[in-house]
Amino acid sequence: MRIRRFTESDATALTRDLLHKATALGKQAVIECDPKQEITKTIAIHEGFDYIGIKDGLSVFIKPL
Image 1 (cartoon, rainbow, N blue to C red):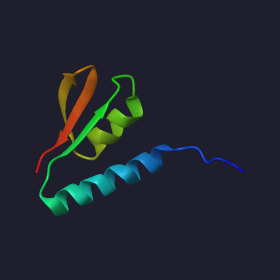
Image 2: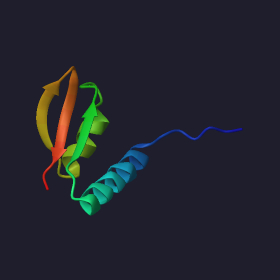
Image 3: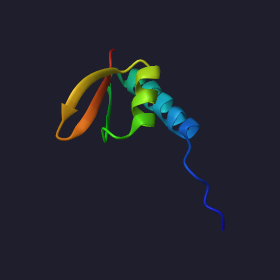
Image 4: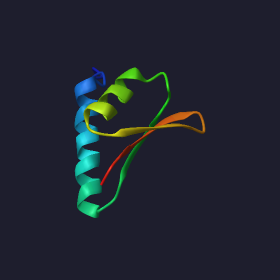
């Protein structure tokens, strides 16, 4: 059995799905990640999330409604 590697395009697709679901529910989308996760931070900024800062050791990004 081959295990497919999780890619940046997979992460982007999941982020867009998160945004779609949050918008449909009238909720704010939040991404929290390890500060070393440069790809996650890049995707968050590219998708319009605002960087809030570090909370409990995690980088926090929020998508404005």
